[in-house]
Image (cartoon, rainbow, N blue to C red; front, side, top):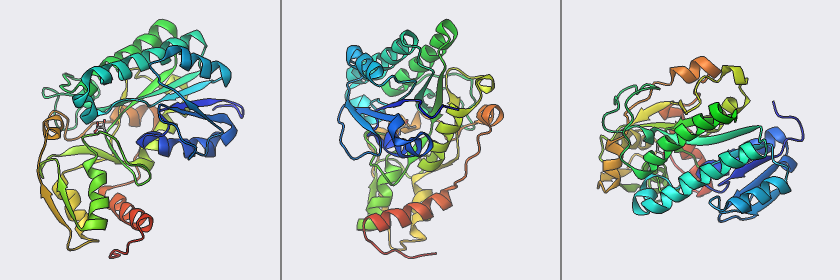
Length: 323
Ligand code: VAH
């Protein structure tokens, strides 16, 4: 457990994950111990300090780490799958050079612990589709998935070669109501809520039967913190842990939403993101995470939908049917 003056840097703090993780870290460690950095920072944060950072700039990162005497890093900055396909060279540069800078400075400055997010995007068309295991064929076809697979091997190398305590989770699609995602293939599962509530209609960019592993953001944040607080002797995976909660198709989440918005109409107009989704698993076996550090999700598709409808309706000042 971190001491009361452990300084924690969250890189990419204003993205979908960072926007929800920072408030939890502030609650646990105190706002004075949380420093946030982003390429597009703003002051809408509970953290004590805000830094502008392009994580590809190693000198800039080192200055921030030294200035704040950082002990732990959550390195979240990356281009996601859809954005990566539109800018593959930039995705490789940000996702790989950014991680390499964090790992190298982690060793150089003796950073205690590092968190880095991987993704189910590391799996590919020849990976088992159902209950995809921790270890199997991994042949990602998106540049995002390629950077995440390479990044996992880098994290494992820096652990065994230099003793760096870097920990990672292969997140499924993440759904939350606080921050809009940017450039993900699973983002439809968030957009559908906003469109259903405000317009009662949504044109989904995936096919109705595109089954993908998903998770409600509060579960993802809790998993991240539980992994980082787990005793080091419990951590047996130094690439990245499979992590799962539930899986669904666009048709299934549309049906769940209709319980609250009966006249909601969802249509399906697959675009380039359908091909990315087809290369990913339908469901994930996360038994190693459950064994090593006691992972257990709390939300289901049904309870997530109920909460998302309620929270977004409040945000948008809309009234929807209660069930
Ligand atoms: C994406 N939300 O869609 C991310 C995630 C499993 C998908 O990595 O790119």
